[in-house]
Picture: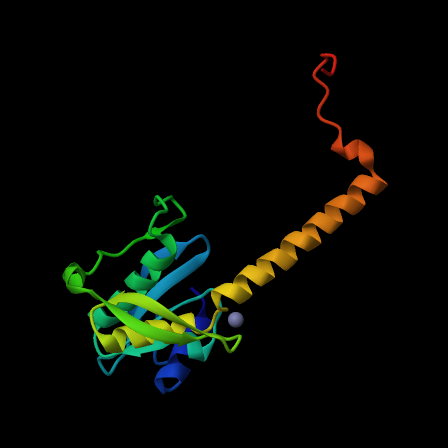
Length: 181
Ligand SMILES: [Zn+2]
């Protein structure tokens, strides 16, 4: 939680600099060094963001705390649904009780790479589903993600092959005193 994040939220919400203090910030989840926060604004609105990357377009503004919390909760579940909580990573706030009322919305996401994909999003309202979709749009579509992963794997394999040529002894298994079969 940095002061520059507060300044970023002030800009996103159209508030004068210095309006917000740390006391307005509620950390709802923690992802290692990254805080996921909801922030009470003086006019009754709430902001939701995190400090992974401080950018005005990553601040979402809501009318109520529940909406801001829902937004973070749904985002959290999308990424960490199956992760057991640890000392450094976990949802910290009380999960919103009424989320039993979520339903599935069909939305089309236009990703940063320009491709579109249909997606089913669990949310309390269609407006919330669209807000979540807009957040996802900052990423890459599944094909571009896979292509990037493949390129990274190929690069790593090329590196490993080069290393085997240059320093084959690095590939030797640790010597345990027994003869090789
Ligand atoms: Zn793509």
